[in-house]
Image (tube, rainbow, N blue to C red; front, side):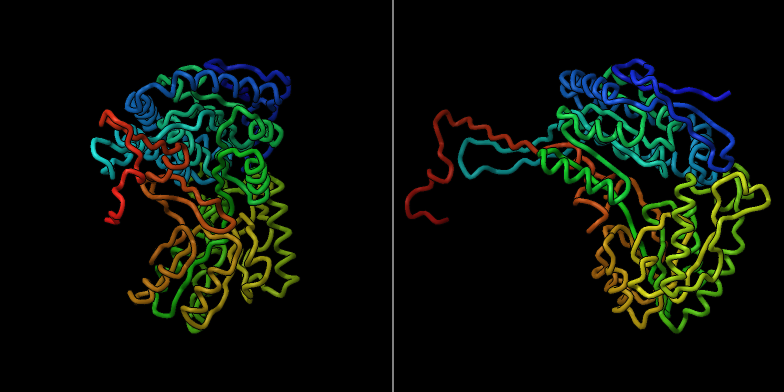
Length: 499
């Protein structure tokens, strides 16, 4: 029987004031409706923000190590339920089970990591230029944080946002994607079980209207959004006009550079995983492969052979390599890019159509696709397709490869395969992405290092690592003068004393 989830507001699971509900189907079998959840109204969102604003007045004064203990307990619960959580991820958004386990593990790792930060949260202490005076900086929270998350990593990405927001003393209203409600419900339920006080974490399901209401609520002090460039720009513009803190993680058009001295087998393996893992539905997916001309024919032959051998199917099946894309609009968008590529003069070397037959007709499956004869300025080489599609672009040397890599509006992840340490370091210095991999694919971030990108990918903030604390807190500088007299800083320097 289909389960119906509810919003979580001020420690209670509540039905929507709107009375409206949405359904989510299994993308591997769209006749299978897996759950219902609220289509929250502005009033539902306002109630959630109100609860968070009230809870902030006490939560911000709970010592950070105590806040962290709640997160540590949550990580322990998540670890104990890893398989259950992973199966839910696969059922609601389609990625194969082994990848879903990785999604959940990343959430577990992030939660443990942030729990450790509860006893760190380093500030600075510095010597004063005046006698009998002490200087330091400390972190303080923003207040109510709006966390708006995508469907493609329904455990990991929320953990990247919720956990650092909570440990730094913020309260949260969490608006997950309507395509991953089960994972959002489970994650909030775990935080509830771990002992998070009422109102500190609130869950408001819904679509674009609920998201807009959350962003526009004046009681929200910060918005953290992961999603498309178009929506991110709208959120950024609104927050800019209203002097509201905003953290944006948006698209990617990531490239793997393969030089003529590369380990070709290793490069092909990395390209297959980076291009077709999660059906290409990662912001770090390798949708461009820039190959030196001399090895391009051999590399392309190997890549095509591997791509054509990938097995499509339900992500719960052990034999499946590539699951479905998330929904029909995604399937149709990918199909439109096939026509765009052909019209631009690119060739579809394999794939290029919806996958049918063998039970695939009932799901949103698209064949792993490789474009050849691609020029850097083509739309298929510039725009994010977000599906199991990659381009082969030829280059003459490292310099041209780096220029092609950098010549897009996004700047999230890039990779290079080479045995030449000099070329590896030159590429590392010159590739203008937030993440660079050497002799590995474009995916595989670790939670203790900053995650994010340049240009259209983000707005300068980072997820994960200690950098996440900078997104979810403000610096407060404190001066303590114990001299017993008024000291006027630079004015108290003796005349003529220039140091």
